[in-house]
Image (cartoon, rainbow over all chains, first blue to last red):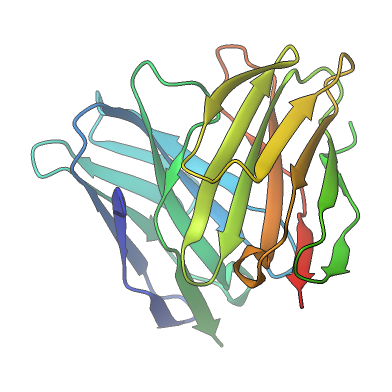
Length: 114
Length: 113
């Protein structure tokens, strides 16, 4: 079954607005939560990542909010731009696992219209 | 530094054939992972190699195999292709240091007819 559940499947946001993508998990062994951005014809690229010892991490217009007790985390894109239109994936990795073993959400296709 | 390189970028095969995909990691990266990406299942982990050894394996049938060479380049092989193997196959490399970052290549688009 899907170990990381991601919603919504698609999102349309007006330029300048806030895009919010949510993910949830059940496995309490997960201790690393990256977000990837993928443009058509390209491989995913790491956007930002968080560990459960912090509740929020911000890098530029991108912020991850993490709720350990609820086993949920979300990506906020502030001042969304048309260039942010892409597919976003949340992922998780278990404590003690190998570096490359990520569990991905199903992805959110974000469209930012001018 | 050049990014992760995958060859070929596109491939068309027929059912029953076998295929080999290649991945050259970023120079200095010794860890290589493979993922299958499909619209229905999303990104699913295939396997991970480090120093020519398979370190982890996902839940795929034995028709899917891989290997890593001494220069860290990796290949994956799929034998007896099925229609459902049509997917984008992604390779990612990591320096395997304290950095958690995995760098993905552009993928190989495999179509099975």
